[in-house]
Every structure is written in structure tokens, then in C-alpha cells.
Length: 430
Image (cartoon, rainbow, N blue to C red):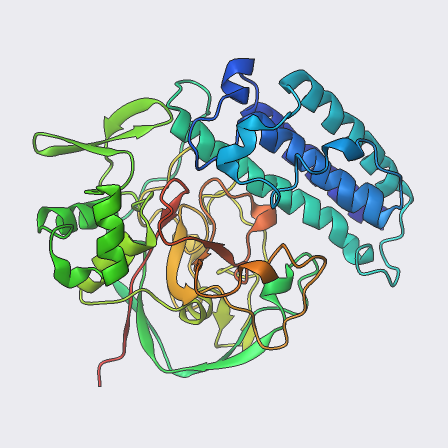
């Protein structure tokens, strides 16, 4: 158990180092709202500390509130993002002092708490997994905010392996049942539970995410102007938004350029496309004669091992996501070239299913049969319905601690500022 607690402590330290690195900037940049879609960065910084205080100190350890007067300010359901600059939020220095004080007490709780008792918040360190994953998710949100800020030099970059062009365009997934969701992964969220059998007909799914070159061909073929490819809702969104290409793309003559963390550069045609809405992904799939996969199809292609009849934690198995298997954890501030991770292939041969870009699916965010809300309804339950589309896989900005084959993300189909892409599927031809 001591080794387990040491691993939890290391994860807590690593995620906090990440949060502080993304907020190591001038106070003006931290308190400014760079888009009505996002909170000021300093709000996110104090929010992760308040969430940690609520769940570890108050709920799990029974400690009296440290700063109860700020609870409403940092309750994500009380105030929409666009209105948060008007709140009396903590300034950068005070926010850092607050989260440091919370973290010191959290480590004290970790040292004394029993992680094998009957309390479901304590068992297997669930409450620590809850706050670690939550903070990583806000770190990814911070990166999206930094991208929208247009400021240069705030986000580190890195090197990634080269891509490769050989290999099939699609992989085949035979008909048959598989086990979707999980009942065994201790830090999985309520919406991933329970594990349940799903029987699917045969289908094909793209081996790789859709790349920039293929997406540019859709644009060149008049894809944004051809009503055949767009749903009625998609046409309305396109008219309102004025979209003509992925977010942050501009055209200069015959070339496409993109702005990435304040720098303008040629669009790398061998990378997965990112910053596209669900409507754009859906239109591209129709243009290509395909469709978006359902989330069940996505999960089976990603995590099911037909040889053993078991679900894998990652596409390749149970081993942690190493650098040669997936582009996760902000190794670089962009997707890896297509075909860069053959060692990360799933049992069916699909590649780059975790990391690089979140992938839109054709499914609405709905509960599994037998769903039970835990530890609070506002994490998943209030979002169920036909408003949010499911995203799978995790982007280059997602941390391995918050990624697995069963993980379900969701967002409005109009969203483009997040690191989203997609791959296509099609039913088996009769």
C-alpha cells in the first residue's frame, strides 16, 4: 500500500507541476478572458484547488472548509464561462497560495487514509484519481485557452516520431459481441460503468485518423459549399459561424497555413486534422462515402481483443502508454504524423486511437444500462441526452492518467477550440 500511496503522490505532484507551468505568465494574461468560450486561466487554477479541497479534504477526510466563501465562485455550474470574469476571483498570487495550502493538507490525508476500506471514495484511492484526472482535464482546457490567446512562447513543443505511409486505409472488425465499458478499472468514471455486452454487425473503420491532406481535398472539392454533405443543423451552424476550414486555418494563394500557439506555419499535410466540429466531421464522412463510427464501434476497434475475448486498457494491452506507442501527455504541442505509432495498434490493426486528437463519434452522450451516478450527478448525469456528442481517445494534450479505451468525453457538436479530429467508418458491404 505504501508503494501505491507513493505513486498517487507522484501523480499529484506531476499534475500540479503541469498546472503551474501553464500559468507561469504575466498576471494580465492570467486574468484576461481570451474567448467567451473559456474561463480566465487563473479561474481554472483556483478551481482545481477548490475541487480538490471539496472532495479530498471535506468529503473523504471530513475536514472543515478552508475558504467556504469562494465555493460559489469556483462552482462550474453556478456561472457560465463567459460570465466568470465578472466574479471576484482570486488573483494569481492568492490562487497559488490557496492551492498550495490545499495540496499540503491533501498529502497529509493521503499519508493517513486507508485505501482498502469500504468507503467507495477511499477504496483504491478513487478520490485521488478523481482530483488527478480532473486537474489534467483542466490543464488541457488551459492549453486550449493558451491557443486562443494567440500569445507566442507560452507553450513548449517537442519532437515526435516520423510517420509512415504504408498500410491499409481501413481495418475490418468482424461481427460479434464485445464487452463495452468497465467494472474493474478503479479510477474509471461513473459514465464508463457498468461493463455490458454489445453485439455489433461487421464494419470497417479507418486505420488512422483523417489527415490534413485528405481534409484539404474535401475543402478543394467544394465540401463546405455542397449542401449534400451537411445535415440541416450543420448547414445552420456553418451559416452562423462562417466556417470554411478547420479553426485556425487560413489560405494564402494555393497554400494552407495555421496558427499554433501564436505562430503561423504551413499546415502539415501528414498530421491528423484537428480543431473541427462534429458537423464538419460528419460532412467530411458523407463526402468520403462513409460515416462517423458509433462509440461502440470505436471502443470495440480500439480495445477489444478477439483472441482472448477480453477488453484491453489501452489499444495495445495493459502496459502504460510509452513514447513509442502514443502521443499523450504533451510530448509536443501538436498531433504526430500519421502512421507514427505502429506499436500502438489495436488488436484489429487500428492506429493512433489514443492520443493526437479527440475523435468525434456518431453517438449522443447517453448512460449505459445500469448506470449509477457516483460520486455526484453533475459529473455525468446532467449531461445525458441529445445535446452532447461523444468524443473518444484523448488528444496530444491529454495525460495518460486520464486516458483509457473506455474513457468517454463529450461536448457540443459546434465545439472546435478543443483538440478534436475524427476517423470514419462504414458498414460491411452486403
